[in-house]
Length: 369
Ligand SMILES: C[S@@+](CC[C@H](N)C(=O)[O-])C[C@H]1O[C@@H](n2cnc3c(N)ncnc32)[C@H](O)[C@@H]1O
Ligand code: SF4
Image (tube, rainbow, N blue to C red; front, side):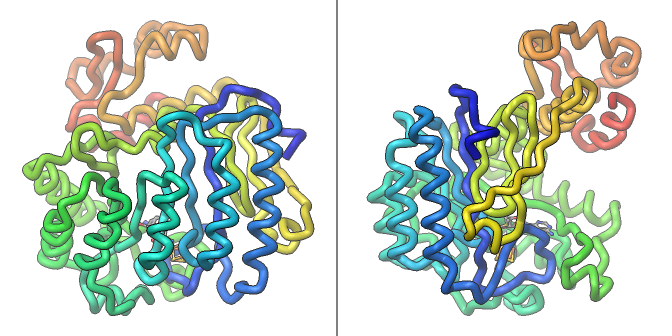
């Protein structure tokens, strides 16, 4: 890690915990099951990397522990690991942990609060028991009771929902959104099911829903959430005002972040890097890192892909600072028709998509990049 982590001022840290209690048929993240005996060794290795950051003087404004399933670590492993992060937290650090409903309990929540975790993301995916069975996640859990318990310790809660799961129709989706609203929490991330190679769904030839259905599901979600006080601040993320995820905004603004852990990917300019997904190597202390220097054109393309997903788009000044160029001049011919049609808006020194533009974001990006 020493070779790649040189710079001082980076605001965000992601840490990957690659263990799960069971495997979901749609998941292509780096994860392992049945590896309980390796978890404490993993924590030991992570702490070595955390100490590298500490010695270099890092303090982070956001820390995000994701997975995999961070809550699948036992209370002792979690305690050792989370306490080691104390010196990396800047004042007012947004400190998030992802949990799965089946592996979070009151003792872990107490621990989270005591180490100053102040945001929690719960993977519910759907409230529908039939579909939960189909995706191997029917834990028989009362999600309302669970959220009440979580709220006692960490009031700032996100829920992940997936739409377009097999067997889902508009009435099931409508129940999911209704149930989410009843939870009375601040944030929701909701993605359309994607089927990726090497997942069980892919092997079983499960298909993604078609574009028209996906669009009508999305429109429904947008309408319901807006009507209930949630703002769409990123295409797939909605929050009550003031509860946007600062950490995830780092990704969408295409800002630098450090990533630690087996299979994790980070961005420290001028490199994007990925740590090898081999658990064996990680546990042996080997950090095999694939790094790629960003080329200017790719850097610009990626900046646009990320930033135009945001309700507020990006600042023209920021673009000029980063790319030494005037966006409106550089892209003049390409953006003209989108500005005229109102899909793109240039206002108050920013450029962003209108509602109509966001619907056509793929088309828009195809023309820009
Ligand atoms: C990396 S997962 C880890 C979270 C946690 N282990 C869980 O399962 O809830 C983060 C989120 O990505 C979303 N996700 C994962 N695979 C997906 C897929 N194939 N299509 C759409 N969303 C997906 C899910 O909503 C999930 O909660
Ligand atoms: S979706 Fe979450 S619980 Fe399921 S396999 Fe992926 S990381 Fe593990």
